[in-house]
Image (cartoon, rainbow, N blue to C red):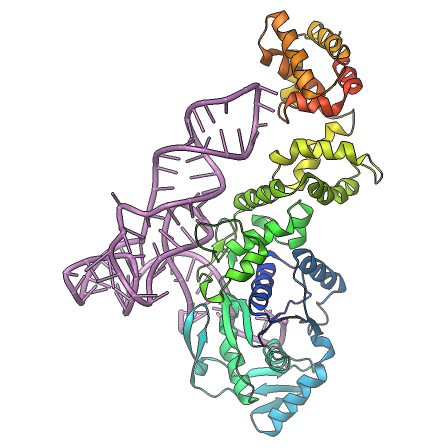
Length: 424
RNA sequence: GACCCUAUCGUCUAGCCUGGUCUAGGACAAGAGCUUUUCAAGCUCUCGACACCGGUUCGAAUCCGGUUAGGGUCACCA
């Protein structure tokens, strides 16, 4: 039975790299019908924070990675100390004050990495390893080996940055006579300009992406593409399909640069694929949180607005930014829109348009367009000459959904009221 | 500095294991056009890569070696 683990340390938020490591672990477990263990590596009591733990758990849940077992290293100190005592008794380790140090014997050891192939190390280059620190807490490599072995972890899937920890852990596996698991070292994710992914090059926390309005499925799809490809020129892949197609050996060896533009594209694709009702569901908490609408807001109206923007947003956040004029009358007018309204006085045209609209029985976009076009014909002007100022007056912007659809949703009274503001 | 990992369009990648079908395919981005009331979307097209040197071979993006470049690790942090 395949068993993998994701072992974050609650000394910071779950970042993009950690999220992807979790993804590949979870995906591997799912593809093999195995178990996914979550182990919190909180041996550094001083730096570990409850706040971070909660955030990590939330982010993993949001991404959709359910864990089968949950452990905390801080609750297992006795186990580590027992093993240290055993190694001490066997003469494989020695004491230095309260600390327990493992004696490293020089030798050549190899691992067969699932992604990189064979990697050879010379332990002669490694100094003696601290097992138990002076404060009696275990070191990372020691606790990690004992946990992976005692939890029955069969495959260790982790970042490339752990390659150099592998020989240190391997000698401990041997010393404690634990069976050695399979290893797979994932390439790291780098920032857009190369180098480490850092806050300077963009958001790094999974929760940041959640707040910016990315859908978890989209983020997972994008992260999956960073180092793995389903083949067949496929870019968008449902997680269930990925589970079927995934093979750890197909994961790339090369570090990949995080590219926000492609993430945006993937997110937009997922937004478009959603039914408007489902999209509204995703949007609603955000709209309430940002106090754009109240909890009991007319969802019929909301749904109409959602439909107008579904095709033109990359993130949920953008919906909030673009659709403001549908929810309040004191919306801002951009300088470009201002120009459309001041270059030419449209009082006469707006007045006539209001009259046309008043005569309409059905205020649907087809009728609105018909009325609009007949006025334009009567005035002998081009449609664009009136479209732009009207859009500016109604929305405060020069860009947005189709004008007639937009007017239909806005409704007759509000359309009239907004046009009147610009009649002198 | 030592050790380790890696190297295909600007970016993500397919191809590499099992050399010929690769004048290297796709996606994002960029540019042009179509459509159009704007912005998107959609459609069509363009730009654009096998890091370098050597070897093996009839033949190398694919195998081997070196160079260079990038990344990682060298804690009583995890």
